[in-house]
Length: 105
View 1 (cartoon, rainbow, N blue to C red):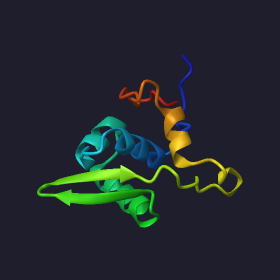
View 2 (view 1 turned 30 degrees about the horizontal axis):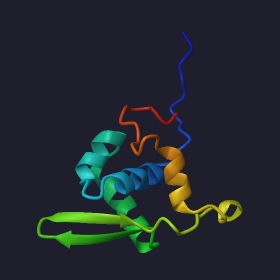
View 3 (view 1 turned 180 degrees about the vertical axis):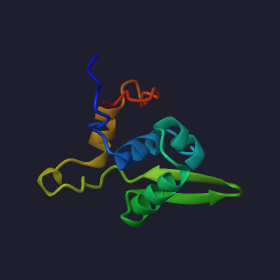
């Protein structure tokens, strides 16, 4: 039996962004469970995305609501002509990111 390596095409930042883009009130815990990463990692990624302007977080009582600035360019220099919204459209089919672990590999 050949063992498969565990790398994926989509980084954790991209996967978190896709989930936030689809589910504006998703919690860090829900994201962590879907992606199989720690909640602490998710919170750091959310801070990264927010500090760079890719997402905006609004607090409504005890619930955070997120919106994605889908017009911003990707961060890779050679792909700055691609908007985040274009990437999110490619990552989702029928508007949903597959929730199965390893679906993006």
